[in-house]
Image 1 (cartoon, rainbow, N blue to C red):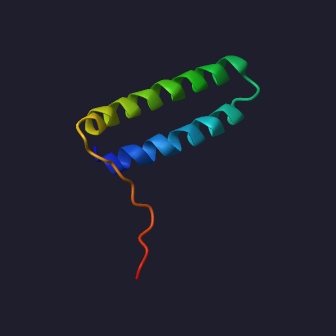
Image 2: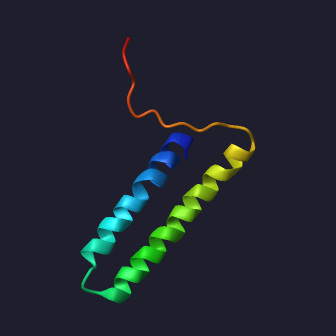
Image 3: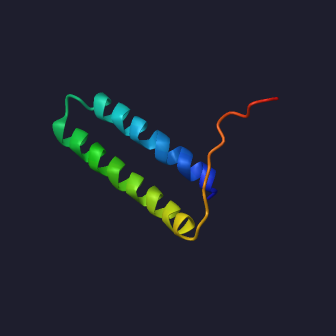
Length: 68
């Protein structure tokens, strides 16, 4: 998986988890499970970026290219 895609997932996953928590507002047990699962999955994606960063790579995510 490319570093740019990993960064995008790391940035968007908490928002998706937050929406899931809001959707489950009437079920406290499922809401807590969604929160913990989101955190665990986020941790996994960050761990996938770790070897690249420790090797000296500077992963980037280009969202918008400015034309000159």
